[in-house]
Image (tube, rainbow over all chains, first blue to last red; front, side, top):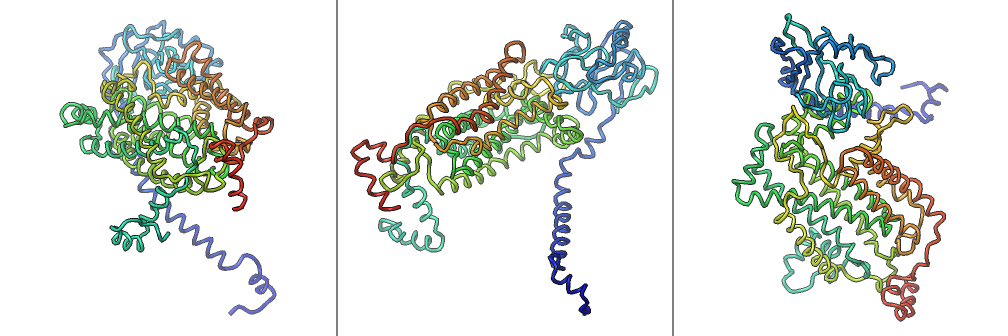
Length: 184
Length: 426
């Protein structure tokens, strides 16, 4: 047994007792146990392995002429591929970056100036902007126009007007040949 | 409680009831339950909502027996219900229009509560449970709307789940989690189906709590004063069972009109186009009962204090439900009924118009005058709850309250005779 020193007596009568300590540690371990039990259920809702596996897309760019736009599916969402004209590249590069909502230079957004590859999902609430088909309303900046809430993107896919907070995302991709890319 | 079971055929019931006092509870809560004698037809909507919930669960269970929650088969399985399943069309139309009816009832029920101050002490929790039912109903309806997997289903799911991407840092992760993938897709549809089946039963549980809280102090009434004695109340049965039944018949006529003569009037024709992840409809609109929230969401087109417009829109849209939740503490007046509140009475109707205006804004493309009206209406909605309600309680001079329900209802003769009873009791 503990000897009855002043120190021990003081501890025995203080507010923090051994029982409090046991309560706290048991409570903390209980919380960890609940968390560990709940997590597998929560995690079932995250993307499954087959969903994650279907995440690269190969695209042959040969048939896409200058000035033409192509939509391909990647991870179930549309990717816009724009074979830009020199005029479009020029207007995209002449913009004063400082005045953009999401400042990014055109060079940062492309691997080859002629090819713009962006995820065709409006960064506002996920609608698909117009501009891929001939005759679509491309908006005043010649890029894309989102019909849902009126966001307007330029020829570099950057947000210029409307409620969207960010530029159209650039997916991870690389040129696997002169005219083929792999997205993802 | 000895005389609870009348009639001769109740020996078995007595035997059971002694061990499981279910019949006694029903007797107490549905037959004898003392109810204010002056309830108007505005008090029908609680029981109507309960009946509508049961109709939704029954039609839903039978639809579930025919429906396939898979992205490739969902749309076709709904069309099969419409064309091949016996009475499938009736079941589906009853369910789809039933959702609209349920919300109409809920909204009338809630505006009734706002007009007659039903949320005031001691009924704060009763009101808050009601708001919780509304929130659960919105979640349930949203997920149910996704199940037919038409264009509106798909894009409503996309836009609404994308709201969560407004949350800083973790937003996109949350959205991926909600989707179970990188877009709304098969995993999303499956989980929405599972939750759409689960949530109504949770609503049912909350309804039970709502009823327990209601029966603790009994119904509020058009005068907003407490029952002070037996002369103020009448038993629930037969007086209000028959009144509720009559109201139910009138309601069912309206419901049946939509189901049989205008089954698609409240829906969007775009939802008969199968979901296409590669193309957004030109104009996305939610169902009518969500339009005001949608209008608030879109009305915030500017950032405040560095908080981006998108996040603010989400905050204000959800906030509209939150202010409803705390209404019992925002309203500082101790007088419940608007009948005795000369200024609030008018502000209530301005609020009704304001909410209708938000609905109109939500239904139209956000251009020109629509944006301005939306912003003014959003501002007024918050001004009403956060400024006018608290201030009005301090400055408004209420009209004198009647001495009792009986005195007000039966006129002066009873008013003179009645006071003896409650005084004797107190």
